[in-house]
Amino acid sequence: MNLRRVLLALGCGAFMSVAVFAQTSGRVVKVRPAEPVYKLKAGSAVEAALSIDIEEGYHINSNRPAESFLIPTALKLQPLKGLIVARVVYPKAKLQKFTFSEKPMSVYEGKALLKFSARAMPSLGAGNHVLKGKLTVQACNNEQCLRPQTIDVEIPFEVTK
Image (cartoon, rainbow, N blue to C red):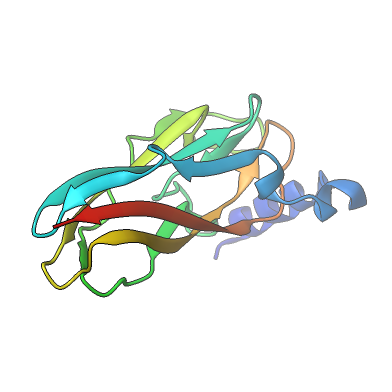
């Protein structure tokens, strides 16, 4: 890590007051499945998505932040026996320049949809199932970054034969 990056990281930290440091990104980032329940037949697939709502005035780093020391948005889905999940497709990020950064940052603002397809194998029993995962985010505004947070997510599936 070069001196410029260290100074940038220290400068960002200097903007945080004790009260802000205690706040987490989960306060301004709300996560939910894009649909209340995903319905599919055994042996078929469905396109699913996780919706991230970011409070106005804040952004989160994209899954590929511009600097290696920034916390990327990352969704890790836990295996569910009988459900095959394709890799997560992240939305296109916005390049935005902030006063605290020399170069534009790769961020999401407003609403972001993380998409993936899920295939129910014939071995997955009919009924309700929940795909669990963890979403890591770090929310920032134009002056400060909140503590990163890993948010538990649950995506419901209803499988029919």
